[in-house]
Length: 246
Length: 337
Image (cartoon, rainbow over all chains, first blue to last red):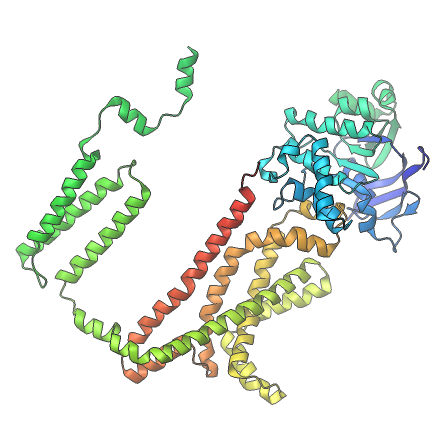
C-alpha cells in the first residue's frame, strides 16, 4: 500500500433535503494517513458532507470512491463499508444499556465475529489508550461528557477502521473536557490514522491537520494547509469566517 | 474565617438546629405521645359504651374519643422527624379505629349484610365452580397475553421499517382491531366462522379474539417504545456496521423494553378483565361462574369472593412490573467502578 494512495474520493457529490440544495457538487480527495479538517459557517453543509461519505445520509447524486470502489453502486453492502469507517458523533451516542467495555466489544463480536475474550482484551487495550481503563464497567450515565466521548472513540477504533470520521466531536463538551478528547485525537493523528474532522478547534487543526477544507453554501470554497488558510486566505467567505472566530 | 464559611456552607439539619437550641416543644416528646396513647387505650376500655345504638350522652363520649384520637394522629403526622413508615402505619390504624367505631355504634344491620354478601357457607358451596372459572380466566388471560405480545411486537418491528405499503396494512389492522367490540369479534369467530368451515372451540375462539384485540394495543405500546429511542443510537449502530436486524436486537429492543414494561403490564391487566366477555360465547370464566352461582344459590356472596380472586390475580402482576422497572433502573445505575 502506497502511503499516498487515495482513500476517499468524491466526484460531484450533491445532496438535496427536499428543495434545499445542501451540497452543490463536492469534488475532493483524502489520502491515506492524511488528517483533513472541514471548517465553515453553520449551514454550510460540512456535517452533511461527512455523513454522506458513509451514507448515513443518502447523497442525491455523485460518486464516492472508498479505496477505489464506488460505494454508491447498487450492489455495495454499505454495512461492510461502514465497518472500515469509524465515526464519532457530537452527542457521543453510547448505548446507555451497556457499560463501557460492552459498548466497545458489541460491534467486534457481532460484526467481526471475534470471541468475547479477544474482544474484551482488545477493548481493554483501547480503554487504556484513551485513559479510561478504570471505567470499563461504568455505564455511560456515570461518565462525564469527555469520558463518554473517549469511550465512543475507543468503540469506533475497536472495529479497526481504515479511516475515522469526527462530526464536531467537542461541540457538546464543557471547555475543561475538550482537551482530553483532543489529546486522544492528536495521538491517533500521530499514529498515522486517516481522519476527517468537522471541527472549529483552531489549536488542534493548526497542529494536527494536514489540510483544511473550507466550506460555504454547499461548496468547498477554499482548501489548503492550516498555514495557508489561517495566514493567507483568499476567499471572502473564509476571511469573514476566520475574522469572527480568531 | 475559613472555618466560619465552612460551617455556613454545611447544610443544617432541622434536628441539629433543635438539638443545639435545646428547645423541644412538649408535643415532640415521645414520652408525651406514649402517655397520650395509654390514655386513649384506657379511655376506650373504660368509658366507651357497649355495642349498640348509643344514647345522646354516649354519642358525645364516642365523638370526644374520636376527636382525641385524631388529635394524637395529627401530632405524630406533623412531626417531620418521625419516620414515614410509622406515619403510614398510624394512618392505617386510624382507618381501622374509625371502621371499628362505625361497626360498634352505627345501627347498620351487620348480620343481614354478612349473610347476603360474606356468606361462608354459600362460598363453600360455590367454590368448585368458582375455582374452575378462575383457571379458565387465567388460561384466557395468559394465552391472550402471549399471542398479543408476539403479534404486537412483530407489527411494531415491521412498522419501524417505515415501508409505506406495509404501514398502510399495519395501521389498518391496528385501527380496525381497536375499534371492533371484543364481544362481536368473539361471536364472529365462534358462531360465523363455522359457516366458512373454520371450526374452533369456544376457548380457542376467545383466546384468538382477545389476542387480536390486545395485539393492536401492544403494537402501539412497542411503537412508542421504539420512538423513544434517539436517532443517534440507530446512527451509532449503523456506523459500527451493525445490520438492521442486529440494530433492532442489540440496540433498540433492550432499550425499548425498559420503556414499555409499565404500559404493557397495564394492558395485560385490562385485557385480562376483558376475559369476562368470553361468557358471550358460552365460556364459563370466573365472573360468569360467580354470576351463575349467585343466581343458583340466590345469594351475591360469590361475586364478592370473586372480586378478591381478581385482586389476588392482578396485584402480584402490577407489583412484579414495579419490581422489574426498579431492577432495570438499578442495573443501569449500579456502581461497578
